[in-house]
Length: 137
Image (cartoon, rainbow, N blue to C red; front, side):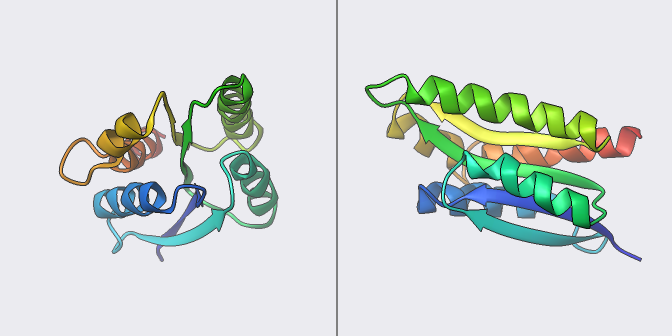
């Protein structure tokens, strides 16, 4: 029986979401895992949906994917820290590996580089990090 993986991604920057998701999927063995993917409008909604879905389903591990780009207000810092804190809190609440693949970038150029499928795609790195923790259990 295949184990289930949950991926929740933010569609606020659709191209970045697509590249991060493709990078993660390339690193996961689809023969061993079935994958549930959900997309939310913004990064702030990722931990909210994870919390709801983890109450209803049994997953082996989860991957959060998205991108936050710094603007001209402190909003970037508030959202970035809140998401990071909540993902860690959820991993302890559900005793489950949750990999943080939500990028916090100063500009679109940085985001593009970190999502590039030909370079070190951070979606793939998030998947490998989650797999590493899962395999250590």
